Length: 259
Length: 367
Image (cartoon, rainbow over all chains, first blue to last red; front, side, top):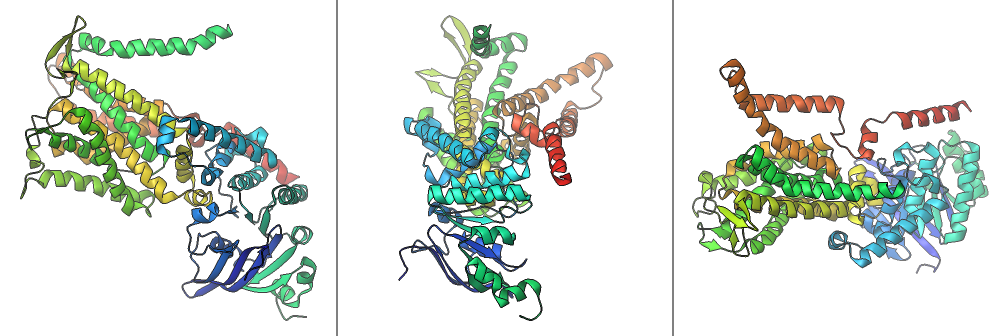
């Protein structure tokens, strides 16, 4: 059925809040190794779709498959376990834990020490704990935050918080990472740095990225394919260049009648 | 110089150990038997506070019914070691079973509260605490399980290697009343509990609890099974409570439902808030202070009689008054507790570092 390379298949997904259809019949396919952009005007349903994909919302209808396995209806932690991590639009770090501890929490789904191992400090637990620490430093290094490992997350500057959230998500060893407006509020040079980081991550870790972003220039330069949402429906999909010319997209963004 | 500094913590530790070992003798000399009893109770409250700290301080679940687990542990001990059912099992069998029994009730309480947060959770747990107490108060008919409001007495004292913790013993050339023996037993168990609490704090589970406390949604997005971790927190907390309850029953020889009322739950919560929530040394200090200070305030009655010739303000009222005042002052001037963790101190009294970051971001905006 599915091609070997389709990592994420979303078919006919709908989400209603009471009478409001926040999403209807959204279908899209993300290939492994792709950087896939999701754009659309405010309130188009981008974050709602993210929440559906990562299990924070139950779907009203439709199917989501990750590497061929149906993941709709699973709890968020089970979806992370299967290799789907995310960041949040309004940064949600563990503000009173250090940067290092934040990333260490990210190792949770890939480690197993339980209450008994922790209390008895078994050899296996100590080994695992050392590995968690090492991995956390590795991911902090990747996003350029190792120097801040001991700072409280809540005290980091804004841009560093964004990057820390990415490091924390990466620590869960995702196959696909969903980023919700990762460069919002950043200046142009910071944005370029982030774009470089995304490219490096894809290259070095065979990571697939799903990206919500308002910065059209960034999306156009970075994404292999783009889908456009408007009023909860997908109105266009394709290469950045083709989407940019699509009359329906222009109409959605500028209002009025299509040219 | 450096080697001297390095040697210092060891020396401090050794001094602390000697102090802890001699403490009952000091208290016995200065105050008498009641002083040693006070120490015993202080240790029980340290156990309770450490347990509640796992739930409230680590996992951030506000539990106002914590005393229920203390009650369950105490009644469990009494059922298996008193003439009530004619059972007299040894303590080393009852205490582990009692902690498991309390842990099972921890799960039972946890299960229906999983979706609740903050105030709502507090109210449900408060209800649970009262339910247990009221059950204990009324389970004397049709089948007499708890002996109702009269409570259960003649509970077996702890007995180790043929030495019953009752009366006075001559050991190693020292005269040791039972309160002394209990002190050393409680101290040993408290030290184990402290070790367990520290290890949990610096573990995968402890970090997951902190994550849960900080942001539940982000925690689930990090692959943390919030349901299991909340249940685990309740069960672990209950374990400490159940252990303390069993010890309490053996120590007192008598238990009744009124020992387990809401005020006790609140008292234990006050201990950890006052000491420094989430910080083990702070929690211990809080528990010791709040056990000993009210006792010390009893002497205010004597003081009044000595200076004024009569007792003008009832000491019981005075104790609550001073207690309340102390809490208000604490919240105003040291909101993070007497001995908070560095982290929490920054969280509640953030000034310097934050100001620097604010200036930085201001600079960003201007650029």
